[in-house]
Picture 1 (cartoon, rainbow, N blue to C red):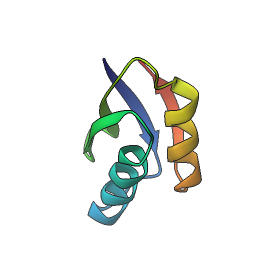
Picture 2: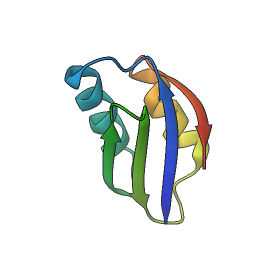
Picture 3: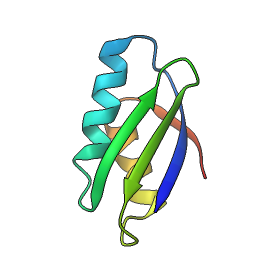
Picture 4: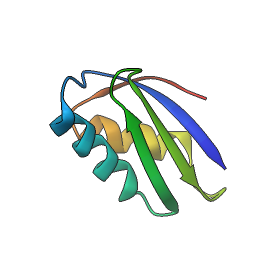
Length: 69
């Protein structure tokens, strides 16, 4: 499955890398790609990965998730 998260607070490539790393460490996530300009993170994961787990990973990295779709 693929999910797109809208993430607030990312301002530079360092932020982008932190969010990608946090999402990639969630069990079941195969890939995470952040579009800094669009303020989105696209995650490819298996069906067991919940929106809550993705949101928690981003929040723990210091950023705010506005939506998951």
